[in-house]
Length: 100
Image (cartoon, rainbow, N blue to C red; front, side, top):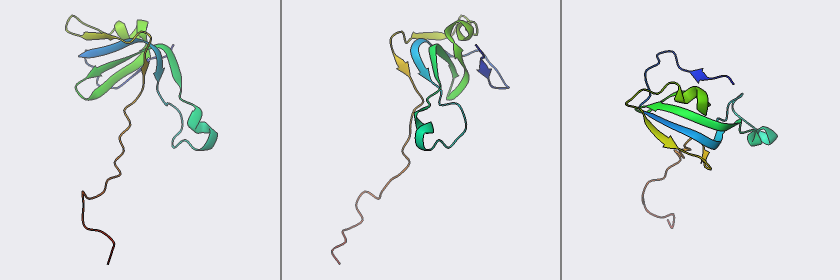
């Protein structure tokens, strides 16, 4: 399996491994229509993280090979790991009503 890493690699602080399904959402963006159902699922997937950055995504075997003695390992067996979705759509708390 191919492992994707970013150019300036460092030892990961955290590895989430052994995920039953890891949804990468890889592929062309934006996804429209039927393509929205293509979640690019990795079985037995893992993610290497340092700070707020994802360093690598791939198979558990490949990603655990990146760990050093300081890496915290989180077992996600039987779980689904997916990107965080942030809805940036906001409204003012209360700026009055539309009565007038």
